[in-house]
Length: 368
Image (cartoon, rainbow, N blue to C red; front, side, top):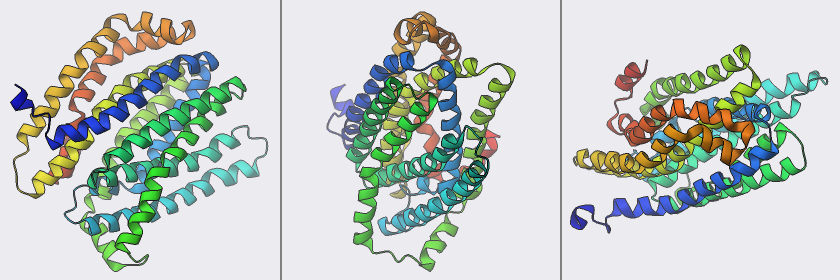
């Protein structure tokens, strides 16, 4: 059994590097959550949920999904050229969003949501940079950078939310804390970006950058519509709940959604990112990746049974005890949502296979 598991394998070593930090980040998120829910109301949580969905769509548009191409290119120099290209597209989209959101807000001084709209371009930019930096680090096997970024994001972001909550600044405290966490988390990636720039010395205006972007056009033409379809569904769900029910209902639903996503975001994605890098490397070398797929699914299945099973049977009581009676309704939503999240958790590594196999068009048709 020990021989089959091979604790000294490169795959498991990288998983342990990511898992050590991501578990720490996840624990920080869970430790801060009961404090945060007692400082903010479900209605204020609803504003954060809407904000996160808006910047999620914006960040996908900003990178045009080229970040997912970075780990699968054969040459580091080519990958960095695409990284640079995506960086400038991100700046352009951020400036456009700034004009679209800020100008109307400034022209209408009675608008009470000026700060909300003002923070959207900032959150959009640093979410996009986080995605780019994460995938570049996957390619270069700098998994410690991803770990440091996640822990920093969780610690600084949640600490800021608590501080703003004590100051009683309302929902803007949740949004500002989220943005502060993203900004500080990106320090690792932005520093590495400029350090790598000195190594490769890629010209700002290079025809080869455009050639590479055209060669991997399936990312903006197929992967981006696929991502926008999924992200827009979540945004539409938020709008429908807000319109048909109440802000409190959406706040409870969103809190449940985010708590159930934490294992997926941290543990599932940690394994998935190592899986993505390893699969891309093996596929480029013409090796069979079937055994790696089975190992990832088996590991996540074993990890999911106890936590998801407990929430399925005792979600309402658990959420009421941990987060306060005002948030007890989130537990009811969690009991309903948990089977879907368990399946997503187990299948999370498989989602990168279309990128590795260059079969995005076929999977996009399935998604539709």
